[in-house]
Structure formats: C-alpha cells, structure tokens
Length: 566
View (tube, rainbow, N blue to C red):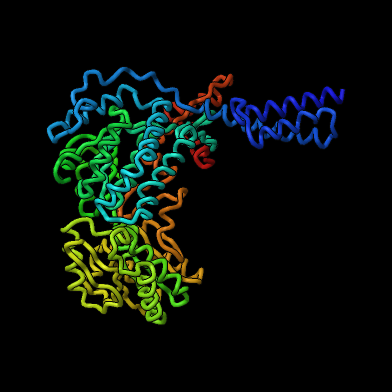
C-alpha cells in the first residue's frame, strides 16, 4: 500500500510539474526533478514528501496558468478590413491631404476588431522586435547622420532599451491584458464578483521627437500595440534620416492596418502635426517641449482625447555640504554631456552648497577632461547639436551668461560643436531661465539646502531632480519640500531607466507616465466591472427590499446603518 501511495504521489508530482512548466516542454531543472522523482516510489518518506512539495508547487503554477487563460477577455472574431482602403497600405508616401482618410481607415481597422486578439498583438510585437534586430547598422548610421552621437549612447538608448521593452511586453502580455479580480468586500454590492477589464482606447497618435528619435517613438508604439489599439506614428523630421528610416521599416515589417506613419516625406513638422490634431484620436502621445506640448494638449482637447505629454524643463541638482563631491561631479558631468546635453532628463543646473562649491566645480572640470580628452572635438566622441537653429540659441547663451567659465566654452557653429562647458553663474543668468538642451552646465552657489529648495519651488515643476547627500534627513527634506516628475538620489538618470518605475512629468513637465508595465497601462482603459450573484435566498440578500422606493423610515434607517458599516 505504501508503494502504491508513493507511486500515486510521484505521479501527482510529475503531473504538477508538467502542468506548471506548460505543455510538457520540460528542460533544465524541471527535467532533473522528474528524473529524480522516478526513483522516489520505493524511497524514504522524506523523498516522498519532496515529491509532494514539488507536485504541489507545480499544480499551483498550473492553476495560475489556467486562471490566466480564464481571465483573458473573449474578443470577437475580427472582420475583414482593408480591401477598400484608399490610403493605408496603398500609398507609400502620405501627404497632408491624405490625413483625414488615413485616420478614418485606421479607425475602421480598430472597429473591425483587427487588433483585439492577443495573437495579432503578439504577431506585431514580434515583428517590431525583428525590425529593430535586423536593422542595427541602419539605425546606427541614421542616428549618427542626425546627431553625430557615439554608438555607445545610441546602442543604449535607441537600440537596446527599446528591444528590452519589447521583450518584456511580449513576456508579460497575457498578464497585462487579463481581467484583474478585485476581491474587496462591499456590503453595498454584496453578493457580487468584481474585476477590472483592460480594453484598448481605439486609435492612437504617437508624435515622436528628435533627441532619441527611435526610442521615443518605438516605446510608446509598442505599448499602444500591446494594448490593442491601431496607431498613427508621426516621426520628427528634425532628425530627418531617422524619420525616413522609421517610416520605411514600419511599412516593411508591420501591418499598415495596425501601424502607419505620416509625415516623414513632408517638409517640417508643424503643418503635419496641426493637420493630425484636427482629426479625432482616442489617445495622443507627445514627446517634446512644453511650448509645443501646450499646442498638442489644446488640439487633443477639442476632441476630448486622452493626452500623454512627456515634456522637459530645468532639472535641478542639489549638492549638499555632506555630499560625496567627487561622485556628484562625475555623475552630473556624465549625465549632462550624454547626447550632447540634448536629453529631457539631463541635469540642467546645479545648486551647490558654498562649503563644497570650489571642490565641486574643480571636479567637474576634471571629469570633463577625463571623459572627453579632446573636448569632444573628434567626430563620434560626443554628440553634435541637432540643427542650426538650436546651435544659434546655445551660442547666444554662451555669449550672454555673464558668469565665470570653469572649463570649455569653445564652439564651432559650422560643425554644430560645443565643448563640454561648466560655468559658475548667478541665478539671474541667461543660463538659468529656460531649459538649455546642450552641453553647458551652470553652477549656482547657495548658502544651504533650504535655500536651494526655496529656489526650486519658485520654478516650474521639473521632469527630474537629483539630490546628493549622505544624510537621509537631508534626502527626505528634499523629497518632501519639492515637486518633480522623478528623483534620483546620489546619482543621475537612473530612476528613468528602472523598468518598474513609471517615467513622466508633473505640471509643466508633463502628464501621464510610461516605461515597463506602465507603457501598456497608458494605452488601455481599466474598465470596472461588477456581476451580481444570484442566491436562493428569496431576495433577502441578493435583492433586498430597501433598495426600492417608496422611501419609508425603515428603509432609510437600514440604509443609514449599512453606509456606516461600509
């Protein structure tokens, strides 16, 4: 009997492991477990118990898998769509006059249910990954042509990070699109079951930007696809080589009824963006400056469209008297000069306590020379300014800042080159007015941290803030007395790169957030659903008398007591 029971337990364990690993495709540790369990039937009770534990764990994973399948929405079969389209999938170069028809056809694709099945979403996400992997060299060359950026920076931002995000979304797609049971008990709705059901918004407009032209288009695009929307992508023509490449690759790899691009063949950006905003989109996702963000928000508002704005601002750095000055200088210089300073989360100015200001500025000069021995003059060593308009604005700032140049200051307008520059300035300096977006770091000396925080509170809310202090009290003081989209303590940029943290602004620096699971969440509505449960109680609980008028004193009294208990 013991042998029979042991054999049964082994079989249960084997079944649990098999189901838990899915489709009996076992390998690695799972295969070793089953091999070990083959000799358990005649073994000791400890081994039998081990088999039971393994089986139980396997069955838990199996139950989780079955529950996930059960929680998937039952989408209708998509209708055939696209055969009568005149623009989408028909024309390779869309013009302004094509925009109304193109948007209408993308809505027809969504209304037909084309993007609802998870199979279709997965197909497009995998195609998006292939698009990136197959075209590494083309992406590299396009970004170099637009920004002169070192391949190391492009590889991180415009290649690997989008691929990692795609792979994460593919792996988590079933979980992120499944119904989400809500178990909280409520007397008001008892007896009931309730859940959140994700649903796509519809047609999404993604307006890209030029400083990280691939990442800042592809990342929101993948979230919109994963959520089940159709998408119109408007690349930024300031980065014209990358814009044209994106349009070519998207049309080659993705279903045009799911994703289409508009604008890469039209001069400039303003007219295309304006024409697109005249059409109704369900979500508008924009990355760029606060000034243009206001225009986009007004355009979305006329259709009451959800608007996600990833903007910028002057991101402050607070260097306290107890900071690790060397580390602060090293990481601030690194983050400031990434992509030639053209990064929305870049540290834009430093408020440094007077006790450590001389050491901090000297260390900044040291690390500028250490990281860029030839001051970034060699092509491919440091990113160039993207265009002549941007270059003229930065040159004017270099001429009018009125401060003391600690290092750098040289520039070449023809090459759109500016040397890594650190300047000690007063708070009235021209460098302290608007976001710089270039390789120039102004440093202001302050008496103490409270003075720094008081100044930050007078400015528009930044996208990011950076705090350097060894004291948790000072760190907490900075967090509690300022507002920012996100904060990294004793470092720069890292909060924006953590996959589990949402990335976005607040106030003037933006609204909405994405990255990781938050990317797909931005493009799907979590629909609250509640199902009343029928009970054989003659309506005592399932259909109580006090719900319905006329409102007697008894019913009002019962309701009053129930509401107190909720």
